[in-house]
Amino acid sequence: MNHISFGTSGWRGILCEEFTFANVRTVVRAIAEHVRDHGDSQKGLIVGYDTRFMGKRFALEAAKVLADAGIKAYLCDRDTPTPVISHAILERKTAGAVNFTASHNPHNYNGIKYSPSWGGPALPETTRDIERRANALVSQTGGKGPAAITTPQTGLISEINPRDSYLKDLERKIDFEAVAALGVIAVDPLYGTGRGYLDLALLRHNAQVKMINGHPDPYFGGFPPEPAEPYIQDFISLVKGSPEIRIGLATDGDADRFGILDADGSYIEPNYIIALLLDYLVRVRGMKGGVARSVATSHLVDAVAALYGIEVYETPVGFKYIGELISEGRIIIGGEESAGLSIWGHVPEKDGILACFLVAEMAAREGRTLRELLERLYARVGRCVTRRENITLSPEIEGRFADKMALMPLDFAGLKVAEIIRVDGVKCILEDGGWLLFRKSGTEPVVRLYGEASSEEKLGAILAAGRDFIVS
Image (cartoon, rainbow, N blue to C red; front, side, top):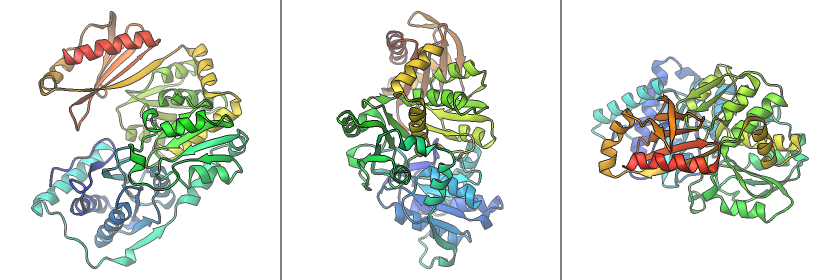
């Protein structure tokens, strides 16, 4: 068994290679020991899963491991969205949850995400402790992991259905009457856990719904279950070909990320959605507080915040940092360019379902298309154009990458570097307010290059300069 290492959102691996029953038992046993040694074992843990291969079987195995450790396991009765599991943690006051999901990763992956009692993704100090315990178990068992449990403590395992409680809570946070009056709403849960949530919440309020990909498919239709433009072309075609549809709402495999289509079927980047919602929550709903965004997220958020005198918190990539700020009540909304967001008073975990309904409410109450709302916002705060590219590194270039990041150029595309931020990766703020971010993947020889400028022409120029710097 390889070394167990948690990424930005849990431990993930390829099914039947790293992700096996033996390795699952190892990681879950480490979580059980962590919970026990922090004095929370009597509160129990929720166990959930998404629609991937063997999800329910893995979850049942985890429940057995927890029960064997004397910890009550609340096993979800069906595949369940990550934000719903977070909601159940807070409602039931459990010690946290063990969730089997690889979120938006391809179908051949699965993962374990641990969320502690505060309901958000585990912070680095927590995952480091679980990693240490898991790798110690690997050493103790010669790489085999704990043995399978043949006589589980069934009295410590019970099934729960957290859906209705979550949906009732959502009704207190969304104006579904306005949403239902919007017109026909297209829904795409991408064969994942969002089915029975996105559609059901709308139907309960007599909305007109047109849904595709609303059944479980562990292959996710042959694409990664990510509601990004390249992977939802069938959904885009549906909305473009149906003039009666007013908006398209999509979620990823575990429903913690969102994808939004305007009435004409055009895809609206998550960066812009976060800024639009910040403006809406302050201007229309009258909410007060700060805003958080990851270092890779558009500064259009900052421009809106400046309009209202709101404090901006810039965090490393990973929603756990934003979730902590939500849990502490310091921000109105927090979001990431990778399509995750949540708001004050909701779960400290990204919630694609909530995001979809907030956008629908905004479109309904504002009485405009999303593109019209975005152009109106640009007229008030200035235009921002943002994009991300992935650059694969040769072994030679990868070997020089750290040295390059230590000594950055003085300018890109003729624009001086005004400031360098090293919150996560290396971010160069340019003299005209544009920026570039270089962030290396922790698992593959890839650099994620993010850029933002006031026009497509400027963005193209600085991204080209960033690419040239990396590969030269």
